[in-house]
Length: 277
Image (cartoon, rainbow, N blue to C red; front, side, top):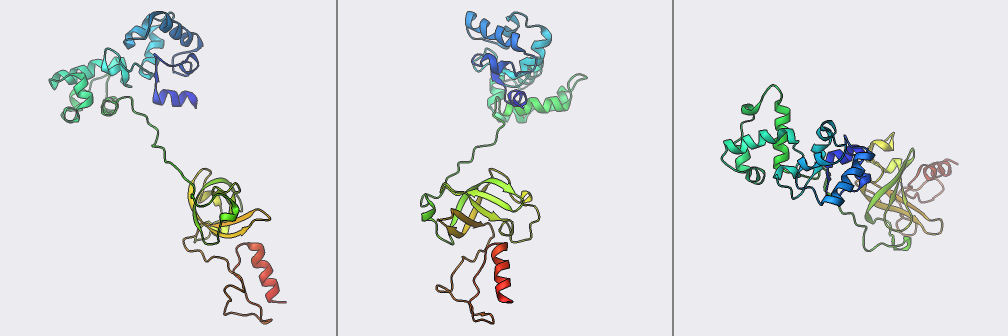
């Protein structure tokens, strides 16, 4: 996985450590060590071709590794891109045909729009390779990772005693189980979203609705500070839990007791048993 990520992003050959270089395709522990030693003795590499001067760096190893090794301030602007040295000639021909420099081709979109890729197709170079070259010229040395989304808990909530039934809070899923999901809402105690509260529709498997590290909005439905229990809901419309003294129900059972909203299966079962005694 590390090797896949390194080769996806590429490494700056003038600053990369020996350990990082070992993950580059075509390089092993010996070549990685030789690159660092050569760099220390002769100064930073000025072009990708200079990497061939490293002891034991053969043509085959260079062919495999060159496209993943970047030189930010190299003599050739393409040295900081993922364009392989074997394809430099193609880019140079494109620049010549458009009467511009390679630097202009990389920085000015209007030049790239004028390129007809069919013109550069050969027996060795097909459209997929040419499309990859153009994509790299559009954003040389780009970071393929998605932009980081900053997450922030509600500033008004720090401890369980700050929670109030009906509050809508941002949270992060910390664990998913068969009976629901645990969500961190920033009070040093994860709350439980029961499987029955994950969606307005029936959910048989919580994993189909949420996943670990997912950012969600939840509603507080129950808080028990002494037992350190927090019940949450992800339903669109949630009726906060009330008591008989605060909001009596108009539907009374045979014994004259007021039915209260319940938030989990155990409470629902207890209420039904009491109703039909």
